[in-house]
Length: 195
Image 1 (cartoon, helix red, strand yellow):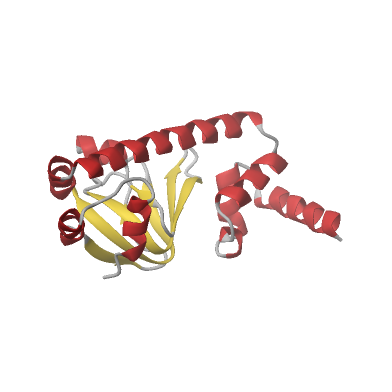
Image 2 (cartoon, rainbow, N blue to C red; image 1 turned 90 degrees about the vertical axis):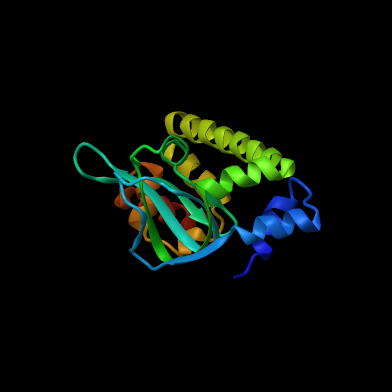
């Protein structure tokens, strides 16, 4: 089990002592989700907090017409959890599906609380993580409601560098809230502007 990336992620925000690092890594479990398989299905309880070591997940829901709506992607060095389901033991509204084979590290709810109680730096890290997540959610809401399709596309490429080459046009378009056909037009415009 490779823990280098997750420890690097944490060390950017807080410092763990060697004994705290040992405790933290002792509760990690590795998990692989293969392409098109589900990590969490809509209606299931999210029982772990996840860290993406390698790969990509999409977080989606089906709208009233049954159309898949992509809300975010979780790529390498990203944490992902359905926080409402995880903390409140409620069924998830979203589903989490692997876009490519994905290697994860997971922390159970019991171990999550153990880490918070035993390692003050982890509590601080989690607070910083949730603050960052909330800020990103605000940005996504504002961008979804105020930016043009071109601006949304530009923001997508900044937020997820290189991801566009790893996922389908349809998934990118769903995330942006536009049709795949219109995304093709945007890409052609961009290509023509560089030539």
